[in-house]
Length: 137
Image 1 (cartoon, helix red, strand yellow):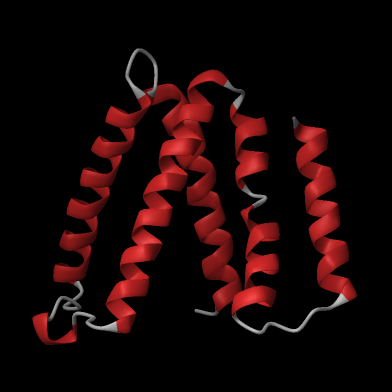
Image 2 (cartoon, one colour):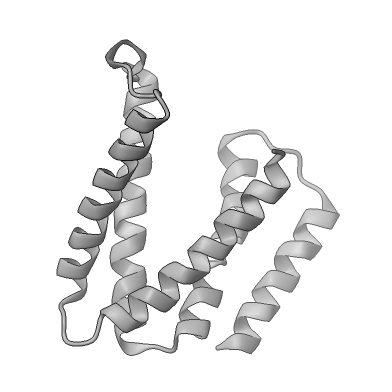
């Protein structure tokens, strides 16, 4: 399967994160909810990796890859904490729209840190995404 169908599937599940999260946050602290979600995700991913035969100790990252995977994990946890806190008090469509501005941040960060080529087409797309997020809030 190519990257586009996988990305669309990921977006669909990301939408369910907001919907299920909004429902699940009724009467619970957002940090507690995020922690429970992370533990469930970790357990689920361990089962999936084991069932697919992908979990090999020798293949675990180390050195620079481990550092950046760990930083990605911390960034993801901080993202979830902020998103769940926003979902607790805000409307799910507005929170999700602003959360998806991460695409705009990815564009900027990839230009700054990964050497991605700047293009007016990408900037126009990012501008439209920004405008769309503003319209949804």
